[in-house]
Length: 95
Image 1: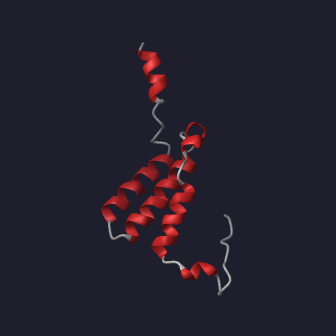
Image 2: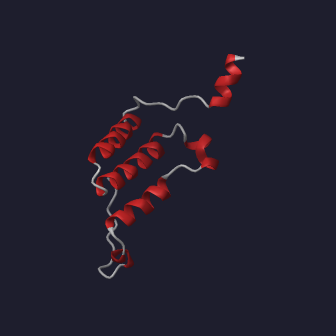
Image 3: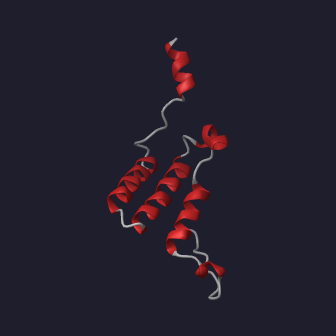
């Protein structure tokens, strides 16, 4: 198992609220439009973005929304979820 990285006691991160840090993490882990096709089926990437979103919802006192994101993240990690085909490819298959 990987080691946790400990920050120095005078870390600049202490200047931010937990919500601000969670929102920054969510933004960092969100799959961008240019990376969508490469990462849409990556369970680690998809679960990471869902878990970060869950943290934001939890810190905003919205536990039900957090739980939904955690359940989706679990689906990616246990491989019960898969990415749907792209709308463009699905349309071409139907033509």
